[in-house]
Amino acid sequence: MRRARLLWQLYASYLAITLLSLAAVTMYASASLRRAYLEQAEVELQERAALMRHQLSRIYHEQGADALDRLVKELAGARETRITVILPSGTVVADSEENPADMKDHSNRPEIVQALKGSAGSDMRISPTLRIRMIYTAIPMTENGQVWAVLRTAVPLASLDRVLHGIYRRIVLGGVLVAVVAAGLSLAAARRITRPLEEIKQGAQRFARGDLRHKLPIFDSEEFGSLAEAMNQMARHLDERIRATVAQRNEQQAVLSSMVEGVLAVDPDLRLISLNETACEFLGIPAGDVQGQGLREVVRNTDLVRFVEQVLQSSGPVDGRFVLHGEFRERHIQTRGAALRDEQGRRMGAVVVLNDVTTLYRLENIRKDFVANVSHELKTPITSIKGFIETLLDGAIDSPTDARRFLEIVARQARRLNAIVEDLLTLSKIEQQTDEARVERQEAALRPTIVAAVQLCEIKAADKDVRVEIDCEPTIHGRLNPPLLEQAVVNLIDNAIKYSERGGDVRVEVKDAGSRIVIRVIDHGCGIESRYLPRLFERFYRVDKARSRKLGGTGLGLAIVKHIAQAHGGWASVESAPGRGSTFTIHLPKTDPRGPRSASTNTA
Ligand code: ADP
Image (cartoon, helix red, strand yellow):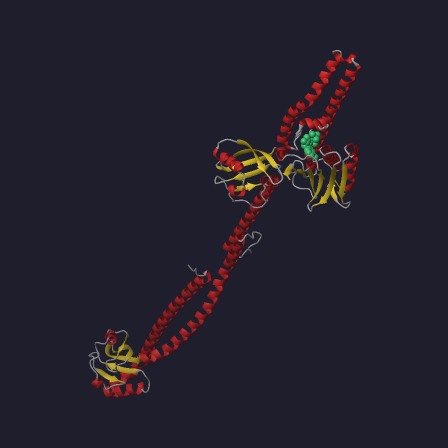
């Protein structure tokens, strides 16, 4: 519905009041004026009659009715005043306009009746004689205290009306002028009242648009001034509240963002209320505004969705654990969820805290595997050493040939023990450094590291008559830890020599592959069956245990390679096929990636 403007409503009211008042005043003034004018006319007629009374009386008594009639006609002359003399019997004895003989009995005329009673009378009516509206006054003519006749004077109302109409015209003209001025003044007054309201309206609209810093002017009028002050105060309070709320929200956001734990909150319909940056990172969601979106659409992990549903249904806190498969690695997440309650304690959803316990989980597993594997690996050489020492003690020591053979075996087993312990120590050291992010890396050329690694393997290569070839541009640089990388390459070259045929050749190739550097150690040895490849980088994993042992392997070489690659933020992979040789590759990213990737395997 279209609403009328207050200005026009006020203006219309003012105008109506003014015009009505003006009309009423004009009408009243006109009526009063007419009354006063008629009264004045009556008085004048009476006075005129009073002036003539004695002269007429004398003439009538001295010269008779005809002389009187002539005199009244003469006195009236060209004037509009009609003079009539009537006897108490009603007989007209003189009239300035008509022949008295032709005139009827006048005794019943109201003014005459009044005058016959001794006082002045008056009336206003249409004259039956002249057929026009007249105003009559009559006064008694007395002789010795007796009314002997009545002197009536009259004027036609038309002449009075002419004068009155002239005055009316002027009054109406004045009224119209006053109305025009009043209309202008009314508009100005209405404007004056509505202007502050207009400003208040515009100010309120700015407040509604969020411009709470805007100030309404303080008006002179008490009501508008108070209203503007109250609105300014309201806007100030609102602004302060909003600022406080925003600051509080920012603080909360900052706390949530800087938390190492992931936090997500949902409403009872599984719509996200909040999701902090860590949770986004865990769940592989780009950080952004996900508020209001459904958890199922945003989070692909069904375990987490199921867990949140469980939290929503349960009355107390719920704990859970699941694995998130990320792009680069999998994370073991421990979760704790509880009901989310509002200020009144009403349930409004659930909040879930996600804790990345991958490191803890890995350490737990490492510890478990370590104890099992190490005990197993150390058991063989220790049993062997123990057995031979007991044999020696039992008397074999007395046979120099046996004693020497047995001691050589003991020495070999001790060397093996040493090798295992050394590899274990290396592994744990790298692992620890990786976990604590202490692996120092620097921008360095790859070639010197590769050359140094090849040099370390030269004797073994020469023993087996294996030729080791390097293909590495001196310009290739990367962010690396040279001693660690050297050890990884040494392990790979050592394996390549070990599992190559006598006289074979090994190639160490370094290539710049855009976002990463790849180091390949290629041999043409026995190769590995594809079913063994997935577990090749595990600790103590060996395809052929006996052969590995015979060759002095500890089963830890490739695990060390994998960990060194991970310490560089990269990963290790293998391609191999039986009888066609193997290619072991270390992938090093040029920039620091989000996390190390576990060793991957490929079959050729
Ligand atoms: P090891 O000390 O036994 O060499 P590694 O961890 O270095 O332990 O290697 C694990 C296993 O992978 C080896 O026992 C071997 O069976 C296999 N292997 C490693 N490198 C090669 C290679 N270049 N050719 C064939 N098999 C290999």
